[in-house]
Image 1 (cartoon, rainbow, N blue to C red):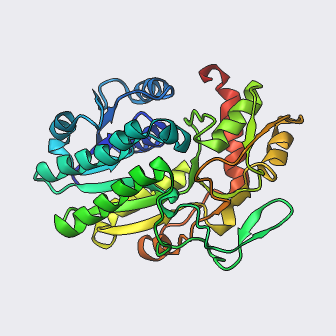
Image 2: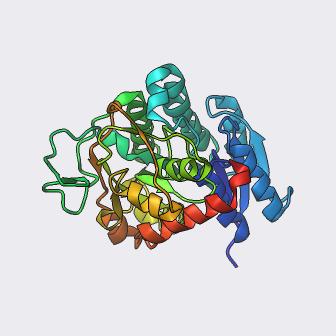
Length: 343
Protein backbone atom coordinates (compact mmCIF):
# COMPACT_ATOMS: atom_id res chain seq x y z
CA UNK A 1 0.00 0.00 0.00
CA UNK A 2 1.38 3.39 -1.01
CA UNK A 3 2.44 5.65 1.84
CA UNK A 4 0.24 8.69 2.39
CA UNK A 5 1.89 11.89 1.23
CA UNK A 6 1.99 15.07 3.28
CA UNK A 7 0.72 18.00 1.24
CA UNK A 8 1.29 21.63 2.10
CA UNK A 9 -1.24 23.83 0.28
CA UNK A 10 -0.55 27.56 0.50
CA UNK A 11 -3.78 29.45 0.02
CA UNK A 12 -5.47 26.18 0.95
CA UNK A 13 -8.65 27.91 2.14
CA UNK A 14 -9.11 29.74 -1.16
CA UNK A 15 -11.25 28.70 -4.10
CA UNK A 16 -8.83 26.35 -5.85
CA UNK A 17 -7.11 25.40 -2.61
CA UNK A 18 -10.23 24.28 -0.76
CA UNK A 19 -11.37 22.21 -3.72
CA UNK A 20 -8.00 20.48 -3.90
CA UNK A 21 -7.77 19.99 -0.14
CA UNK A 22 -11.22 18.38 -0.23
CA UNK A 23 -10.02 15.90 -2.84
CA UNK A 24 -6.79 15.14 -0.96
CA UNK A 25 -8.61 14.51 2.32
CA UNK A 26 -11.25 12.38 0.62
CA UNK A 27 -8.56 9.98 -0.55
CA UNK A 28 -6.72 9.95 2.76
CA UNK A 29 -3.72 12.23 2.24
CA UNK A 30 -2.22 14.28 5.07
CA UNK A 31 -2.80 17.99 4.51
CA UNK A 32 -1.53 21.23 5.99
CA UNK A 33 -3.38 24.39 4.96
CA UNK A 34 -1.28 27.57 5.10
CA UNK A 35 -3.41 30.67 4.58
CA UNK A 36 -3.59 34.26 5.85
CA UNK A 37 -7.40 34.30 5.48
CA UNK A 38 -7.36 37.71 3.81
CA UNK A 39 -9.94 36.69 1.21
CA UNK A 40 -13.59 36.86 2.22
CA UNK A 41 -14.44 33.33 1.18
CA UNK A 42 -11.55 31.66 3.04
CA UNK A 43 -13.24 31.34 6.47
CA UNK A 44 -16.37 29.94 4.78
CA UNK A 45 -14.29 27.40 2.85
CA UNK A 46 -12.49 26.33 6.02
CA UNK A 47 -15.80 25.78 7.82
CA UNK A 48 -16.97 23.68 4.87
CA UNK A 49 -13.86 21.47 5.06
CA UNK A 50 -14.28 21.06 8.82
CA UNK A 51 -17.94 20.12 8.36
CA UNK A 52 -17.01 17.57 5.69
CA UNK A 53 -14.06 15.91 7.43
CA UNK A 54 -13.92 17.10 11.04
CA UNK A 55 -11.57 19.61 12.66
CA UNK A 56 -8.82 17.07 13.28
CA UNK A 57 -8.62 15.74 9.72
CA UNK A 58 -6.08 18.38 8.65
CA UNK A 59 -3.82 21.07 10.09
CA UNK A 60 -4.30 24.80 9.61
CA UNK A 61 -1.49 27.33 9.92
CA UNK A 62 -2.58 30.95 9.86
CA UNK A 63 0.35 32.57 8.13
CA UNK A 64 1.45 34.74 5.24
CA UNK A 65 3.88 33.67 2.51
CA UNK A 66 5.70 36.95 3.08
CA UNK A 67 6.78 35.51 6.45
CA UNK A 68 9.85 33.53 5.37
CA UNK A 69 10.58 31.90 8.73
CA UNK A 70 6.99 30.78 9.31
CA UNK A 71 6.59 29.17 5.90
CA UNK A 72 10.03 27.52 6.25
CA UNK A 73 9.00 26.01 9.57
CA UNK A 74 5.69 24.82 8.12
CA UNK A 75 7.28 23.21 5.06
CA UNK A 76 9.77 21.00 6.90
CA UNK A 77 7.86 17.72 6.55
CA UNK A 78 6.17 18.27 3.19
CA UNK A 79 6.28 15.71 0.38
CA UNK A 80 4.29 17.95 -1.99
CA UNK A 81 3.91 21.73 -1.88
CA UNK A 82 1.09 23.25 -3.91
CA UNK A 83 1.66 27.00 -3.99
CA UNK A 84 -1.64 28.81 -4.61
CA UNK A 85 -1.33 31.75 -2.17
CA UNK A 86 -0.89 35.30 -3.39
CA UNK A 87 -2.49 38.49 -4.61
CA UNK A 88 -4.87 37.55 -7.43
CA UNK A 89 -6.17 40.67 -9.21
CA UNK A 90 -4.62 42.82 -11.93
CA UNK A 91 -6.55 45.92 -10.81
CA UNK A 92 -5.38 45.57 -7.20
CA UNK A 93 -1.79 45.20 -8.40
CA UNK A 94 -2.05 48.51 -10.27
CA UNK A 95 -3.40 50.24 -7.17
CA UNK A 96 -0.85 48.72 -4.76
CA UNK A 97 2.13 47.31 -6.67
CA UNK A 98 4.34 46.87 -3.61
CA UNK A 99 1.87 44.61 -1.83
CA UNK A 100 1.42 42.66 -5.07
CA UNK A 101 5.19 42.22 -5.45
CA UNK A 102 5.68 41.12 -1.87
CA UNK A 103 2.75 38.68 -1.98
CA UNK A 104 3.55 37.10 -5.33
CA UNK A 105 7.23 37.50 -6.24
CA UNK A 106 8.74 37.55 -2.74
CA UNK A 107 6.09 35.17 -1.40
CA UNK A 108 6.85 32.59 -4.08
CA UNK A 109 10.58 32.96 -3.47
CA UNK A 110 9.99 32.35 0.25
CA UNK A 111 7.99 29.17 -0.43
CA UNK A 112 10.64 27.91 -2.86
CA UNK A 113 13.38 28.53 -0.32
CA UNK A 114 11.29 26.77 2.33
CA UNK A 115 11.05 23.76 0.00
CA UNK A 116 14.81 23.80 -0.66
CA UNK A 117 15.72 24.24 3.01
CA UNK A 118 13.48 21.34 4.07
CA UNK A 119 16.01 18.86 2.68
CA UNK A 120 13.14 16.63 1.50
CA UNK A 121 13.18 17.71 -2.15
CA UNK A 122 9.37 18.04 -2.21
CA UNK A 123 7.37 18.17 -5.43
CA UNK A 124 6.51 21.84 -5.97
CA UNK A 125 3.46 22.88 -8.02
CA UNK A 126 3.03 26.56 -8.84
CA UNK A 127 -0.18 28.19 -10.04
CA UNK A 128 1.02 30.73 -12.60
CA UNK A 129 -1.19 32.65 -15.01
CA UNK A 130 -1.76 33.32 -18.69
CA UNK A 131 -1.04 36.98 -17.87
CA UNK A 132 2.69 36.20 -18.23
CA UNK A 133 2.11 36.39 -22.01
CA UNK A 134 0.94 40.00 -21.77
CA UNK A 135 -1.40 41.57 -24.28
CA UNK A 136 0.05 39.56 -27.20
CA UNK A 137 -0.38 42.67 -29.36
CA UNK A 138 1.76 41.21 -32.14
CA UNK A 139 -0.65 38.28 -32.61
CA UNK A 140 -3.15 39.08 -35.35
CA UNK A 141 -6.83 38.97 -34.41
CA UNK A 142 -10.14 38.85 -36.25
CA UNK A 143 -13.26 40.57 -34.94
CA UNK A 144 -16.49 38.61 -35.28
CA UNK A 145 -20.03 39.65 -34.26
CA UNK A 146 -19.78 38.24 -30.72
CA UNK A 147 -16.06 37.62 -30.16
CA UNK A 148 -12.47 38.27 -31.07
CA UNK A 149 -10.36 35.32 -32.20
CA UNK A 150 -6.79 34.50 -33.15
CA UNK A 151 -6.11 34.54 -36.88
CA UNK A 152 -3.28 31.98 -36.89
CA UNK A 153 -3.07 30.41 -33.40
CA UNK A 154 -5.86 27.98 -34.23
CA UNK A 155 -5.08 25.62 -31.34
CA UNK A 156 -4.44 28.49 -28.92
CA UNK A 157 -1.46 30.12 -27.25
CA UNK A 158 1.47 27.68 -26.83
CA UNK A 159 4.07 27.65 -24.03
CA UNK A 160 6.59 28.93 -26.60
CA UNK A 161 4.74 32.26 -26.92
CA UNK A 162 7.21 34.98 -25.82
CA UNK A 163 6.77 36.15 -22.24
CA UNK A 164 5.69 39.79 -21.93
CA UNK A 165 4.80 40.63 -18.34
CA UNK A 166 2.17 43.38 -18.42
CA UNK A 167 0.82 45.01 -15.24
CA UNK A 168 2.42 44.63 -11.81
CA UNK A 169 0.43 41.40 -11.40
CA UNK A 170 1.88 39.99 -14.62
CA UNK A 171 5.37 40.96 -13.44
CA UNK A 172 5.03 39.49 -9.95
CA UNK A 173 3.43 36.23 -11.10
CA UNK A 174 5.88 36.02 -13.98
CA UNK A 175 8.84 36.46 -11.64
CA UNK A 176 7.51 33.60 -9.54
CA UNK A 177 6.92 31.54 -12.70
CA UNK A 178 10.55 31.88 -13.76
CA UNK A 179 11.95 31.31 -10.27
CA UNK A 180 9.96 28.09 -9.93
CA UNK A 181 11.11 26.92 -13.34
CA UNK A 182 14.74 27.73 -12.61
CA UNK A 183 14.82 26.02 -9.20
CA UNK A 184 14.39 22.74 -11.10
CA UNK A 185 17.53 23.53 -13.11
CA UNK A 186 19.72 25.10 -10.45
CA UNK A 187 18.71 23.13 -7.35
CA UNK A 188 17.17 20.02 -8.94
CA UNK A 189 13.90 20.71 -7.11
CA UNK A 190 11.03 18.83 -8.82
CA UNK A 191 8.96 21.88 -9.74
CA UNK A 192 6.06 22.25 -12.18
CA UNK A 193 4.61 25.53 -13.48
CA UNK A 194 0.98 25.65 -14.58
CA UNK A 195 0.02 28.79 -16.51
CA UNK A 196 -3.69 28.81 -15.77
CA UNK A 197 -6.52 30.37 -17.75
CA UNK A 198 -9.88 31.33 -16.24
CA UNK A 199 -10.69 28.78 -13.55
CA UNK A 200 -14.26 28.53 -12.27
CA UNK A 201 -16.39 26.29 -10.10
CA UNK A 202 -18.02 25.88 -6.67
CA UNK A 203 -16.53 27.59 -3.58
CA UNK A 204 -15.49 30.53 -5.77
CA UNK A 205 -16.55 33.79 -4.17
CA UNK A 206 -15.78 35.88 -7.26
CA UNK A 207 -15.43 39.65 -7.13
CA UNK A 208 -15.49 42.19 -9.92
CA UNK A 209 -11.75 42.15 -10.63
CA UNK A 210 -11.11 38.42 -10.26
CA UNK A 211 -13.07 35.26 -11.00
CA UNK A 212 -15.34 36.80 -13.63
CA UNK A 213 -17.44 33.70 -14.39
CA UNK A 214 -18.41 33.29 -10.75
CA UNK A 215 -18.76 37.04 -10.23
CA UNK A 216 -21.25 37.47 -13.08
CA UNK A 217 -23.30 34.51 -11.88
CA UNK A 218 -23.28 35.69 -8.24
CA UNK A 219 -24.17 39.25 -9.25
CA UNK A 220 -27.01 38.07 -11.49
CA UNK A 221 -28.49 35.73 -8.87
CA UNK A 222 -28.11 38.27 -6.05
CA UNK A 223 -29.26 41.28 -8.09
CA UNK A 224 -25.98 43.17 -7.87
CA UNK A 225 -24.62 45.67 -10.37
CA UNK A 226 -22.47 44.39 -13.23
CA UNK A 227 -19.98 46.51 -15.19
CA UNK A 228 -18.50 45.29 -18.47
CA UNK A 229 -15.04 46.70 -19.22
CA UNK A 230 -14.03 46.94 -22.87
CA UNK A 231 -16.38 45.73 -25.58
CA UNK A 232 -17.46 42.48 -23.88
CA UNK A 233 -16.20 40.46 -26.83
CA UNK A 234 -12.95 39.51 -25.07
CA UNK A 235 -12.52 35.76 -25.42
CA UNK A 236 -11.32 33.40 -22.69
CA UNK A 237 -11.07 29.66 -22.38
CA UNK A 238 -12.62 28.62 -19.10
CA UNK A 239 -11.58 25.58 -17.11
CA UNK A 240 -13.57 23.89 -14.35
CA UNK A 241 -11.67 23.55 -11.09
CA UNK A 242 -12.14 19.76 -11.09
CA UNK A 243 -10.28 19.55 -14.40
CA UNK A 244 -7.54 21.80 -13.03
CA UNK A 245 -6.87 19.68 -9.97
CA UNK A 246 -6.81 16.58 -12.17
CA UNK A 247 -3.70 18.17 -13.70
CA UNK A 248 -2.16 18.71 -10.25
CA UNK A 249 -2.66 15.03 -9.47
CA UNK A 250 -1.16 13.96 -12.79
CA UNK A 251 1.88 16.18 -12.27
CA UNK A 252 2.56 14.51 -8.92
CA UNK A 253 1.95 11.06 -10.37
CA UNK A 254 4.18 11.72 -13.40
CA UNK A 255 6.76 13.98 -11.78
CA UNK A 256 9.62 12.30 -13.65
CA UNK A 257 8.07 13.71 -16.85
CA UNK A 258 6.68 16.95 -15.42
CA UNK A 259 9.66 18.16 -13.33
CA UNK A 260 11.07 21.42 -14.61
CA UNK A 261 8.26 21.81 -17.14
CA UNK A 262 5.80 24.59 -17.89
CA UNK A 263 2.26 23.76 -19.01
CA UNK A 264 -0.60 25.93 -20.21
CA UNK A 265 -3.82 24.84 -18.52
CA UNK A 266 -7.13 26.11 -19.79
CA UNK A 267 -10.29 24.98 -21.43
CA UNK A 268 -8.57 25.19 -24.80
CA UNK A 269 -10.27 26.06 -28.10
CA UNK A 270 -13.28 23.85 -27.35
CA UNK A 271 -14.17 25.78 -24.19
CA UNK A 272 -13.95 29.42 -25.26
CA UNK A 273 -16.51 32.13 -24.64
CA UNK A 274 -16.62 35.90 -24.92
CA UNK A 275 -17.09 37.41 -21.49
CA UNK A 276 -20.38 39.18 -22.15
CA UNK A 277 -21.48 39.14 -25.82
CA UNK A 278 -21.81 35.34 -25.48
CA UNK A 279 -21.84 34.73 -21.73
CA UNK A 280 -24.48 37.42 -21.12
CA UNK A 281 -27.26 35.75 -23.16
CA UNK A 282 -26.36 32.37 -21.64
CA UNK A 283 -26.67 33.85 -18.14
CA UNK A 284 -29.97 35.62 -18.97
CA UNK A 285 -31.39 32.31 -20.15
CA UNK A 286 -30.39 30.59 -16.89
CA UNK A 287 -31.77 33.50 -14.87
CA UNK A 288 -34.97 33.77 -16.89
CA UNK A 289 -34.62 37.55 -17.01
CA UNK A 290 -32.73 40.32 -18.79
CA UNK A 291 -29.63 41.73 -17.11
CA UNK A 292 -28.81 45.45 -17.26
CA UNK A 293 -25.09 46.21 -17.27
CA UNK A 294 -22.95 49.34 -17.04
CA UNK A 295 -20.02 49.90 -19.37
CA UNK A 296 -16.44 50.91 -18.59
CA UNK A 297 -13.15 51.47 -20.44
CA UNK A 298 -10.66 48.70 -21.17
CA UNK A 299 -8.54 47.78 -18.17
CA UNK A 300 -4.71 47.58 -18.28
CA UNK A 301 -3.33 44.24 -19.37
CA UNK A 302 -6.73 42.96 -20.52
CA UNK A 303 -6.14 40.62 -23.46
CA UNK A 304 -8.73 40.77 -26.23
CA UNK A 305 -8.19 37.04 -26.74
CA UNK A 306 -6.66 34.31 -24.69
CA UNK A 307 -7.15 30.63 -25.02
CA UNK A 308 -4.50 28.07 -24.30
CA UNK A 309 -2.97 25.43 -26.48
CA UNK A 310 -3.16 22.52 -24.03
CA UNK A 311 -1.54 19.92 -26.29
CA UNK A 312 1.67 19.74 -24.23
CA UNK A 313 -0.27 18.76 -21.09
CA UNK A 314 -2.29 16.30 -23.16
CA UNK A 315 0.76 14.69 -24.75
CA UNK A 316 2.99 14.55 -21.68
CA UNK A 317 0.55 14.11 -18.79
CA UNK A 318 -2.45 12.55 -20.49
CA UNK A 319 -4.58 15.48 -19.30
CA UNK A 320 -7.44 17.25 -21.01
CA UNK A 321 -10.55 19.16 -19.95
CA UNK A 322 -13.56 16.90 -19.41
CA UNK A 323 -16.21 19.38 -18.18
CA UNK A 324 -17.62 21.47 -21.04
CA UNK A 325 -18.70 25.09 -20.82
CA UNK A 326 -22.45 24.44 -20.79
CA UNK A 327 -22.33 21.72 -18.13
CA UNK A 328 -19.84 23.57 -15.95
CA UNK A 329 -21.60 26.95 -16.06
CA UNK A 330 -25.00 25.34 -15.40
CA UNK A 331 -23.62 23.52 -12.36
CA UNK A 332 -22.02 26.68 -10.96
CA UNK A 333 -25.26 28.61 -11.48
CA UNK A 334 -27.19 25.94 -9.54
CA UNK A 335 -24.55 25.93 -6.78
CA UNK A 336 -24.80 29.71 -6.36
CA UNK A 337 -28.61 29.56 -6.26
CA UNK A 338 -28.49 26.80 -3.64
CA UNK A 339 -25.97 28.69 -1.50
CA UNK A 340 -27.28 32.26 -1.50
CA UNK A 341 -26.69 32.42 2.25
CA UNK A 342 -22.91 32.38 1.58
CA UNK A 343 -23.07 35.57 -0.45
